[in-house]
Length: 474
Image 1 (cartoon, rainbow, N blue to C red):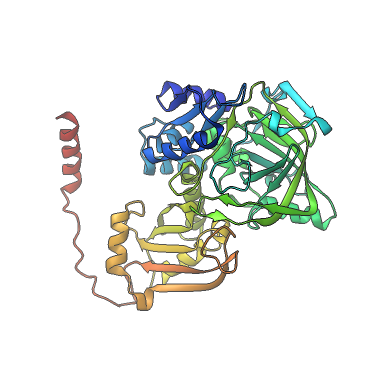
Image 2: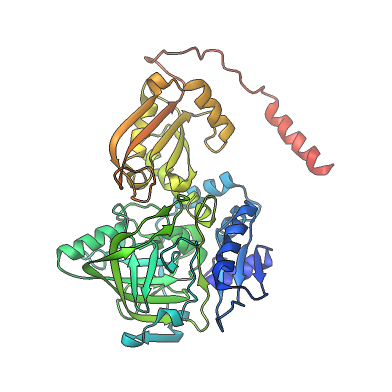
């Protein structure tokens, strides 16, 4: 049964032992963020956290780490919480094949219960805002679905965008937004500014879990995130019309803020402790004027802690980075077997592939760099053979140790684009990218001596199953 809102998912997490309610009084800073930082160190079955007794607030409700484990991610997809990482990614790929599933419009969204407009808009009265890391430049909203559309083609659902971007709260009705140049919203903003216009946006906070997954997926410009959400849910994603902008927003959101990104206006934003495990510095970024806020009574503020990996964001953007990369590569190169882009938002991508001829793996590696994800993120690509599991790091290290010759197999591509947050970029937004060819050479590339590789005994697979059963029943 797909979830239509955040609250129904929290109930299932609770029933499955994956929600930890912190009932004693906590400080807004540093307790909430410190707890979310700590729970991420509990590994692949870490629970979500729910706070409703926060000192200084009368009715605050904060949910953290909602997607912050493989167990929670599995439940978000309607899978048993014990489902393993690779099986979740394979299931994600199977559901991707259903795409697109058109969303359904619904009336009476729960977020329409309360409204602020114009001068009465005050986000501080709606959300219990807190800092996440002690070096942050202010309060952030970092897990909202931001909705925009192409100003040159309004109403074209293929060119609408639903994305997750960091948002700094600059005042009661003023926000700063980080639109990475490779992201669709940055293209929407550029087009609006070329027309001398502001860009209308709707910001939906506290969404059903699949909306957050779809919003964090690197899709092509003309692919609709709601249609992906429907494929992942196995049912159309419910949406409603935002009253001020007319934009389609998730039906079950906790809060919907509407306004405009003001054309050609920039203010200092940051610093912020990012997914890279480093703080980003202050930069001049676009600003949003909030003109209307609609919200459920006593809304749940879904927040996301991020910092030194792994944290919730690494689970949120793991499968949904691997699968589109795999699908895009597979369309051009059927030999591709699997893609692991789970590490630090896919700044490192590991690809296993068969090969047609010498140099083929390098061509696949170069193609990674030109995908929607690779343009802004992938900085190192490791190519391994089809019999090497890219999710099995000991196997990947074996391939690097025995297949890669630095004199031939390190391919540097200079002066490529990367997101400005990448700490190794110099200047910001530019980096030399690296392809490591750790595959077995094939003709006409006859380097090395790879004719006598040890293989698993034919009976090993059956014995593995037998031993696992013995271990489980002892």
